[in-house]
Length: 273
Image 1 (spheres, rainbow, N blue to C red):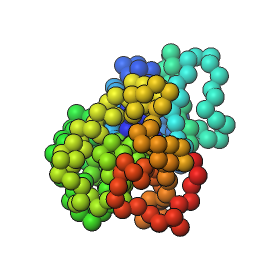
Image 2: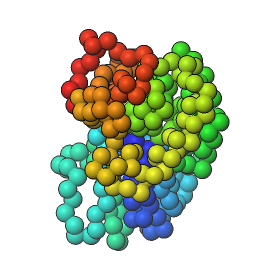
Image 3: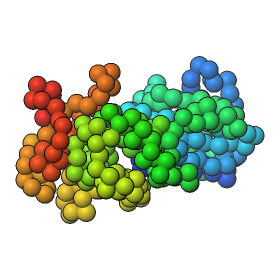
């Protein structure tokens, strides 16, 4: 699933292509909204809210989409060949006289009144890249269930919006704790650093084509995707294991030396990279 910085970049591309221009083409290929026609209306803005995209359209309408694992929005110039996937994977087309935005494999696509956007995003916690960012509230949300594993609390978009599996692993490494640490056991000094560090990571990467958390040339990430490779700090092999409630487990990476604390037994380690 895309991280908040990736969705922010998608919103910026869509905004640059569509905002302030009248739609000359509109095609929503989902049964519920297949007859909706947005042509003749201007796109007002496109904004990201956590991992959600909100395309606001003249007349008090918002097109809400979510990329989840495989979705994407591609922007093409007139006459440019579309290359985001086969035609049957297209879920939305929004075009003007200059650009066309094509939504591929969008698992969530709905048209709603702008005044009712809360139905789609009202459950989200403070947005790390949004104007509603509130570090105190975000931290309180993460710590509200002391027994919950920190990694799971960070992924819960109701606590704070924008962290995905990559940032979960990287943030826990930078805090020096394992993702399986109960949130309530996070040392106070590190808990205080958590909101600002999370925001710093996403803000630093929202304008980059390649995500970097290390600041090291040629080494983009500290632990994510680096199973069995040496830790960049201590040279201990990085480990990986699934974390989740059994219904949505995600590969999670950590250094057993730099991140002491609770961790899965070897029997739960199912990934090699």
